[in-house]
Amino acid sequence: MINVAQIIESGTNILFVTLDSLRHDVASMALAQGSTPHLAGVLPGGQWERRQTPGTFTLPAHMAFFSGFLPKLPQPQQPARLWECRPPAFKNTPPETFVFDASNLLDGLAAHGYSTACVGGVTYFSAQTPLGSVLPAMFHEAHWRPEFCSPEIESTRHQTDQALDIADRYSGRQPLFLFVNVSATHVPHGHYIGDSRDSTASQTAALAYADTHLGRLLDGLAARGPWLVIMCADHGDAYGDDGFHGRGIAHPSVWNVPFAAWVHG
Image (cartoon, rainbow, N blue to C red):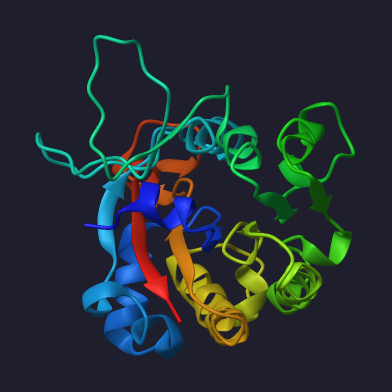
């Protein structure tokens, strides 16, 4: 069990990565096929947990994450939450849960001396529209460029470069909460297999591409000291499953997501 309250009290840096739209079955299949060797080498037990998302598309899922509600295990008994908004007085919170006395995690971390930085991916992080401004406005600094978005075949390389630059600037200064929304696994990703259509095969290829740069990100951060790493999908995506397509729908392909958390470095 990770004691996040203790980790934050110690000022340990935090990396939170969401692999946008990544289905649990795709993530697990990629591991089994050996397509994601960098992730295989760092995931606890070498595998993803299957969890269920609190939101079926990007905006509500991330609002839930930053409010304290990460994906849950598909079982009656749940482990202690990693972080939680201060509850009413009648509710007990496990000592290992980080309790923030603010309306969202980012403000709660700031009150503990953390700087918060966002490397956006999909357009909900672009600040180019009213809705696209909601999530990035929660951070001290937020970065988004068109080359961070899924139509760009090298999106994860560009995002990783930006994330490592941010880590360099904060190294040795103050604790950092670094958030990266990986867009490569979000549609469109058919271009990774030379197809105009998106599918589980092209999402697998997109994840295999992202794996190399996620490995580079994790190695680069570990050289700067230990990090608490949380990595998950915000939701999945349907590619004709039972006739369904897309996200924002109540279907197992959408609500079952991969999840992992560990101390790295």
